Length: 225
Ligand code: DC
Image (cartoon, rainbow, N blue to C red; front, side):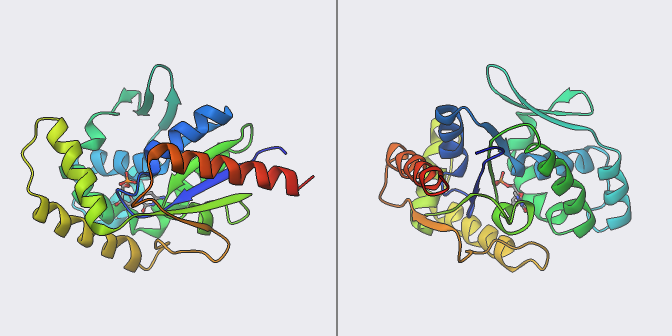
C-alpha cells in the first residue's frame, strides 16, 4: 500500500509523540509532529511582538514563514532557517499556542504543508485534527487517550526529571484547561471520530501501545489485500 497514513490524535499528554516516534521508526515511516508547527508560529509571533488578537498580522506572518521538519540524530524544526526545536517546547509557547491554532487561515496554511508530507512517503502524523481535517482518508486512525490524573502525573514526572519544580494540582488544572481549549474551539476541534480506534493508555506501557498500533497496521494491510 502506498502513502499509508497512520493518524494519531488525542489530548495533550496522552503519549502521542513518544508512541508515534517509535511506531514510525519500527515501520520505517516518516514521523510528523503537527503540534510543533503550531508551536513554531506561536514562537515567531512572540519574538516579533505580534499581538495575539491581531489576526491579520498573524496570518500575514504565517504566509511568510518557511517551516521544515526533518530528522537526523533527532527530530528538528527549522523555521526561516533557524533551529527552534528546543525553544518551541517552552511553557510560555505552550500557553499561547491556542491563539494561532484557532485561526482558520493559519490552519489552512499548515494543512497544506502537512498534506505534502504524504506525497512521497508513508507517514505517522500526530496532532488533534489529523483524522478529521488533514487526512480524513487516512488508512488507520488512532485516538490516544489517558485519564486527566495520569496525564498530569506524566507531565509532573517529566518536569521533575528536568529538575524543574512542579505542583501536581497546578499541572492538573492546566491539563483540564488545555483539554477544554482543544475540544471546544470552533475550528478543527479535537474529536473522537467514529472510524478511529480508541486506545486508553492510562494503564498501558509505551511498548504495549506501540504493539497495538503496529498490529492494527498489519490488520489493515492484510484486509486491503
Ligand atoms: O501536541 P502539542 O501539545 O505540541 O500541540 C501544541 C498546541 O497546538 C496545542 O495547543 C494544540 C495545538 N494543535 C492543534 O491545534 N492541532 C494540531 N494538529 C496539533 C496541535
